[in-house]
Image (cartoon, rainbow, N blue to C red; front, top):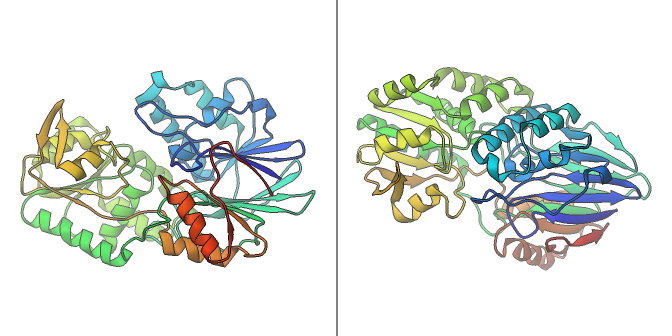
Amino acid sequence: MRVRFLGGAREIGRSAILVSEGGTRILLDMGVILEPVPGFPAHVRPRDLSAVVITHAHLDHSGASPILYTSWKVPLYATKVTLSLMKLLLLDFIKVSGPLLPFEVIEVENLMECAEPVNFGEPIDIGNLTVTLYSSGHIPGAAQVLVESKRTGKRLLYTGDLNTLPTRLVGPADTQVPIPDALIIESTYANENHPDRMMEEERFVEAVREVVERGGIALIPSLAVGRAQEILCILTAHHFEYDVVLDGMARQASAIIRSYTEFVRNPDLLKRALSYAHWVSSWRDRREVVRQRPLAIVSSAGMLKGGPVLYYLKHVVNDPKSSIFLVSYQIPGTPGDVLLRTGRVFVEGKEVRVKAEVERFDFSAHAGADQLMKFVRKVASKDRTKILPVHGEGDNCPLFASRLQSEGFKALAPQPLDEVRV
């Protein structure tokens, strides 16, 4: 097998990995970098592809996939919930960034016509290769991809985005996989660990309670897919007794995830959490919500780049009783990142100093450094497995490779467009 890194090597975003065996070529992910001007992977001709496999719906892994469906039909494989969430996110991507994208709604429709849902553990024969998906523990339906050569028996495992610890929403990544000859593993937090999740949950719920009990609004900007639903589950699991509002694209994402509870760790908890929250359905509802304080509001977008959260933001920035709790990763340069670093934010075109409390909580859906090492020790062989760290900013990928080498593993952080033989 030959593996070429079209995107996602030593960067976060535009994940795209081309796997070739004889005349069979499979593309693993096709994402974008969500800069002001989206960045795309290196070009690959759709007619040269045997199949596309998408690990999960987040745009850094799926956002460029419609490019492949302008004039060609390529089978695309993913879990059922991933396909539904992909469609939601891609159509929203077009709505927000349409003039900057080389595709339109028709390409998304073409993609969906070529999509074939697959289950975890179900082998798919694609020419000279066999593909099997395993849970990656990241968001509902997120997958690792095992690619096996029918000609040589060699195996490649691509983790996608990986979380080895359970969250309120999904269980941990599956480690019961065959030993691979090559392991392509994410490195988002390869050089730092996360705080204890239960302690972080308790700290978060107590902070939300304090805001509501002093008469303020706890505004919780959340990623629409995964994080918003987990926040609602956390509040419900800790018996949060005050009003909770759900708004933005998180509503549609929640409805989709509620329809695929086989991909959720605790379906009963999710159903109770979604039933407890008040779902905002109109601007009239929004105006009523801000008059109903105190309460907690969970709304997209998680990085304050758009969505109904901006309406709520202008009603809390000057209120010292209220708080803005950031629970999602903030890409450098985004409004959420600027708010964390400077305490300032733009509201209706004017920069203001925020009087509300601002705090960050770490509910990452990516494995931390120690958990990544435990995963490698569990699934890889020092004698057999070549480990290829990707999906990391700055020096994360090469530093992770160095740590692996210090433990006796064969590891190399690929550069963009590098090709590796397995």
